[in-house]
Image (cartoon, rainbow, N blue to C red; front, side, top):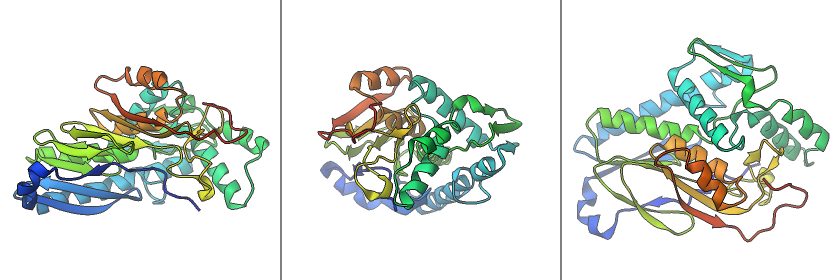
Length: 308
């Protein structure tokens, strides 16, 4: 039913000046939350470290997956509460709340009931009615999420999605694990990228820009990177403030930051910004965050969809 949510046209490649070192690079691939994972490790014991990283990814999927029925997130959504929540879920949600405030409510993991309603309507071949949209919006609101080390609770009827932050968070955790085990030259790509500090990695953004990534993270989002029903018009990124898919004002937005989770969340929220100034104001709330590319789409918003 759906094309891919993220228009990931970020690519990592060895620069010509690094080709002599290419045999030292160990490449391992897998999946995380449905996205392709690629690890590029420059270390004599890279194969063992890559296996360790993949095991960590599998562990974190049992925290963040919407589709594994016994994951921490799926349990929270089903029961409306989760006792003794994993630290990783608490940390990720705390960051989500910070980005929620900085984005003026644009980034909001509680949008899941609206997403589900939109998806069901599209599966039936009919657009979501305004009455249905109003009901779904009544189940959205970050104030309905209560976090503590003992328990996470949701207001009745609410559910969360961490699709706009969890892939980045997983990349960060893999980077921390590898660093703790002595690896300082690696590029972790879970759909969001983290480069460890002792090597620069040349990457290109979806908008065609180039940069050397070193000791920081990069994420790209695009309103039409994934669309409901594959129609090419109805963005998979929903604006909780309007209840509608994000208007396709931006072809893609790439943001770098000290962490991939932060870059992931900011790039998702930036797709709802009406102009670059708003993006810059949001990023200014987070030291080290920067817009690497923001490509305006010469496509009019879908008729009837209010601007963000």
